[in-house]
Every structure is written in structure tokens, then in C-alpha cells.
Amino acid sequence: MTETDAAGRSLKKFEGFMGSLGAYLTSWGPGYATIQLDLSDLHRNGIDVVHGGVMASLIDTAGAHAGIFCEEPGRRRYALTISLNVNLVGNVNEGTLIADARLRKAGKTVFLSACDVKDDKGNLLATGEVIGRYGRSSDKAEGVTKANGS
Image (spheres, rainbow, N blue to C red):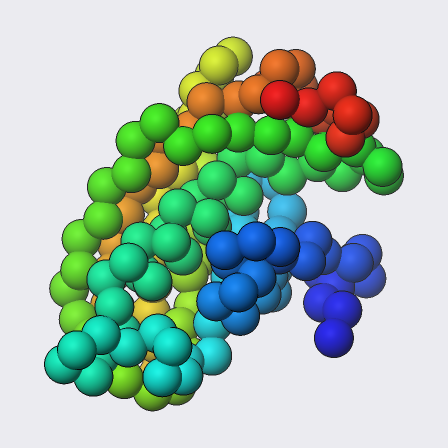
């Protein structure tokens, strides 16, 4: 299934680790990103609730995406996480997780995002902050071509 934003643009599909978790982008634009994850046995720990690493991964990825949105077709922005702060404040074992991130501050080389993870009933489960470092020329809104990213 291809997700689209409010303007009908196709959203980025996850590959690698986040793709293997089954996470999907439901909203993405300048300064914000929302990622959802439908829970399964894969996401639970030894006491049958969502593993903290799943929450951390959602915060990391949503927070990074809030800082790297690019409106230019065929171009993208890159970043690396340099600091990740995660606070686990609740837990669930079924349903859907919703990670909602907002860009708080962006500079020439680094940016700061905040993220809340809630369940599909609106209960707060985790909060966090991401400090990311932009890749080469990715601090610019027009981004770079895929071949030029770092």
C-alpha cells in the first residue's frame, strides 16, 4: 500500500530495519513526521509488552524525518542521529503505535526534534528528543540528488 500526504504526494517507504518492523509513514511535511506501527508478537519483550527498543526506533526515525523533509521531486535530505533521548512512560501489548515528531530548531549543521509515542487510544507511552546532524548540503530545503547524499 502506498501512503500519501494531504496533497496526494507519495510518502517514503521504509527499507532496512524500520521496514522489517513494519513501520509506515502516515504524515510528513516541513517540520513534522508521523509514523505508525501495527503491533505483533515481533514487537513484544519477555513480559509481553512493547520492547523499549521499538519505541526508541520510532522516536529516532520520526524525529529524524521531521528534520529532513524535502519538497523537491527526485531530491532528498540526509541526516545522522548524534543524540537520542527516550523516556518510557507507559506500555501496551496490542494495537497501533503512533509516533508524532515536530522539528523544534534547525541550524546549519544540526537540528533538534521532539517526539511523542501514543497508542491508538491516545495514551502517552514514550517521549523523546533527537539531535541530528545534516548530511552534506542537506541543511538546504532543496536537498540533494540521491547520488550526492552522505
